[in-house]
Image 1: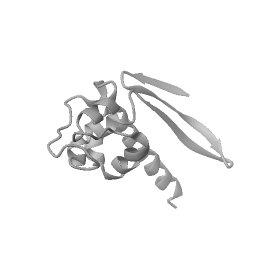
Image 2: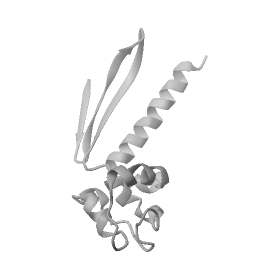
Image 3: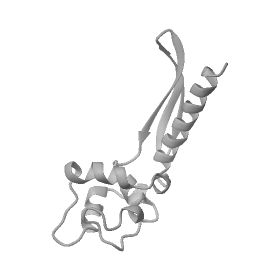
Image 4: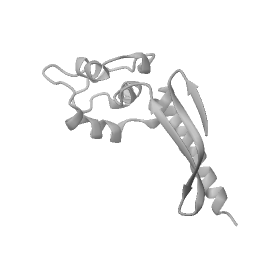
Length: 125
């Protein structure tokens, strides 16, 4: 196994056994809260589920700690972010291209593309 440690998390790449077949395995651990993805994609979430209509994504979304608090601070008066009420809706609505501004999510995205490409190549005649 090869461990590639970087400042936004780390990935472990290797070969695993799965149903008598060799499969590539990648593990990506994000540096920050899941909600930091919503900060990166804030522009695409403007006006949704209580977020202010004029919300702008912060320049460096992965550096913000307490992303849940940031979301609450950028909601209309009287409304606070609730993971149980808002998380799934935000995840379904956010633009993935904008979320890729988070380096760890971008790494996850690229790894999924790589794994899918490998799977397609391994099934080709």
